[in-house]
Image 1 (cartoon, rainbow, N blue to C red):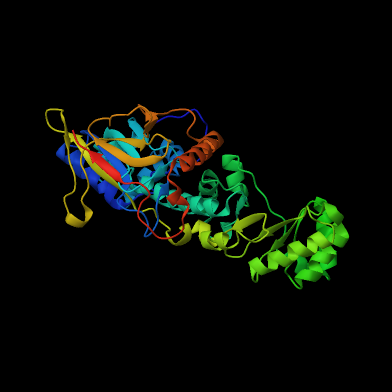
Image 2: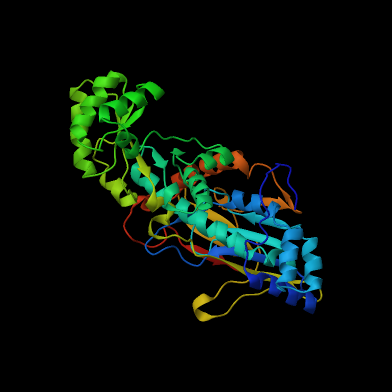
Length: 442
């Protein structure tokens, strides 16, 4: 697989499970490794009570697959530890994905059994991507799905992603990317800003105030460094005294005050009143402190201008994985003809056959059903919307899906898909999927 984007990323080939390579070795031994195959990533169900999910991570995944190769360090490790035999090592030394990848674009809503990603290649090429592919999609879709619910609860008020200190360092950058795709305005994570062109923000923590002999001295230093338009954290000691000091120092040009503890609804109300009385009706109020979509919804009546969200966001707000699975759904037989295959276990059954997806819309442009055609394209009534896009063709990443451009494209897709979904998706109450997924057989 090749790319012209010039990413400087480490190899991703060992971000995988041991059994991926033992399956490869077994398939090479049987001669079935080079059978053309179709794998599909999907979620059998949404997290309990959720009405929709949001796709994220595809752009990161494509960048990672471009670096999914086996150099001498990886091959030497596999050789020394006897994970695979020499025949398999020889195959891996020349590995580069050369197939096709289709899927729902990032930012798109998905539902139970939506074919979120489809990989078409040989069994050998597609099989060993399973663990890496699922680790990316399960994490990023979970974050984007939670972020979308938070954005819905926030309405027109912007949200800031600030959860880096509550997760793994690489997960932090990925979470920031997923959050921005789902509508977050900015992030505190600088690595995410560098990689994906995201807007970064941040001012000061309580330690900055505690460093100085007085709160006034701390505020004076911050204003001198960043100007009166900065945001001052006002709940280190006494909130009212801090607000008065902030206004005294910055005047009516004070950008914002940040509240990070206490009863945020009541506190925001009287801080707003105090700011207005002091002539700072343009100074904004930013709230943080373990917010999730429910806390944000509870703050709708409060005079809050923006929300900073951390722990709940980067942990998927109670659903840290999207529960995606990756299944072989079609392969060629000895004659070279494709046949459908599927696991038949009662509690984990899947539907065989290559899938094609369509979102049915009514006369008002509102989504009513997810139609998944098995082995054929569902019929379009004229205003319906095909969902699958091609990301990779013959091993080449198609333009527009990766890097900063991919993030902004996904952000637009999320805004558009949310307008299309029925209003029930804006409810935080537990419920069934907003629209049903219907299989349409040949």
